[in-house]
Amino acid sequence: MTAEDVLEELRELRAGDLPTHGGRTLAYVYDSGLSEVDELGAAAHALASSANGLDPTAFPSLLRMENDLVGSAARLLGGTGETVGSVTSGGTESCMLAVLAARDAHPEVTSPSIVLPTTAHAAFHKAAHFFGVRALSVPVDPVTFRAVPDAMAAAVDDTTVLVVASAPSYAHGVLDPIPEIAALLNGVRFHVDACIGGWVLPYLDADLGPFGFDVPGVTSVSVDLHKYAYCPKGVSVLLHANAELRRSQYFASAAWPGYTMLNTTLQSTRSGGPLAAAWAVVRHVGDDGYARLASAAREAAVEIRAGVEALDGVRVLGDPVSTLLAFTTDPDAGFDLFTVADEMRERGWYVQPQFAHEASPANLHLTVTAANRGSEKEFLADLTASVKAARESGPVVIDPHVAEFVAALDPATLTSEQFAGLLAAAGLGDGAGLPARMAEINALLAAAPGPLRERLLLEFLGALYTPS
Image 1 (cartoon, rainbow, N blue to C red):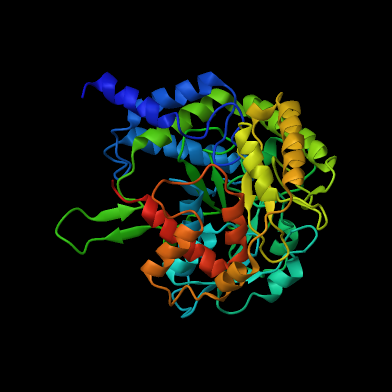
Image 2: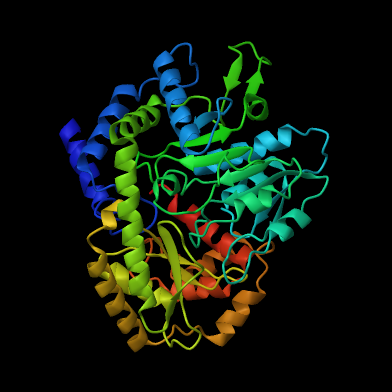
């Protein structure tokens, strides 16, 4: 195939994806609304994509750019002259490295644990799974969805190597009381997950209080640049208060006849493309630019929140302080949120369904970006119409016998064949991908216990990733 034929095929494939620009996909993507920012990031990515971050002595340009990005993040998040860090592939890698560094700093602890609020990102559960660490989840306030400092501190014991809080949490967009938690930890490592808020909260004209290294006791902070720094994916920064805290994150091996392997992150080979793209975008936008983008995103979020709260039968969860929010229905609303999501999809918007978990009911999540400024009225008009359509359709009803059957299943004992049958019954097993409307499937998944839902979706994911 010619190069142009290949690119044309790629364009055709991309036509079926959710839009990444225009503010109509309110999860997964972050849009500044500035076309030159995207063009700059793509050009910088192309210039450095063949360089390899594995060896900074071979590619000193990447070393310079990484140190520049870490320095920018440190200054933004209350760092000092001792603050150090690493550029990673994304928030999950940053969070996993924070857990790994904490675990390996305490080899004397035979059964290490981390303490986190139930609203902490699932990346910490992934880290616990991968690194053999116990994750102790502490219930949050059932009204505000913020971590409870006394409860967090009470969960800390001699096995605790790390405590985690969010700035803000992804699910609800609320800011945990980080200074209050830090004051109770008596020297235990304390990580602030600011992956989604670290590049926007400092630029907001709001009295949110400190949440980074300007809080005594905070030892590490993660912040994603491919979120509200509006850089191409995937780039994140993990900061440590000093080099001693970072040391246990690194890996070295001379136990083979090749080069001595030295890794600062989970990856060995690292393309210089994402790093260069982020470096270029951050330098171009600058502090004044980020302040304008943060203000636009926050103003859009405030206007959308007011419109959501004006809808009959709908309420916002907690008190979101940044650019994220989630809303649910009143118990007697008479309609289904999953149907609202389907109706919004038909009107050209993607809003993210979130299943119930402990005190948090099923809800729809919105990640608002600068590109949403100016289209709030259109979004709210379509949301109002979607709620009206969902109310007319009525709640999704799952056959009680099916719900009872699903709730009784044990994911640990079911075979792949049985799972295939369940997926087919849920409309996920015909090999044709997802149906146009997901309300009934989401309602069935919501009826399944968490471990069963995980297994069902993993089986579905495995079916998707099968070559044709």
